[in-house]
Length: 155
Image (cartoon, rainbow, N blue to C red; front, side, top):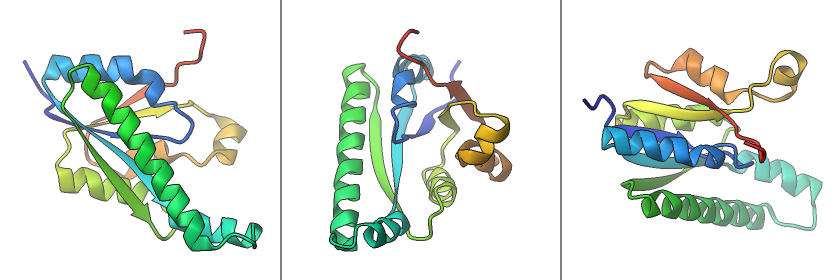
């Protein structure tokens, strides 16, 4: 019996989500679900980086960030498609530094049944130092969320 038809999967910068593609593919296959991979480019960060790297124009940083994000989405989608999973992609842009708001909007717009997040599982002081998008999504989203721990190289 299928419960989930549309799985939204935000990709992170460090590969944590990609470390769980076997699990994600198995769930998508079991549910005969379509997967939508999304990533957020924070152009506000480009303004910050531009001030730090004054010799580089912020527009060039924006273009580089967007190109890198598109490449990440393309490669990740190919990995899932190779496993027989119907996969869509969407590049989300944030102009205000928020990562969770574009994800919330994408989930609603696409009518996702389930969001799958990979998490490092930071706690205590580490959680304060590493902004937790997972926690903000849990607070603001009214959809089921499956949180998978990151796999390390030894697993």
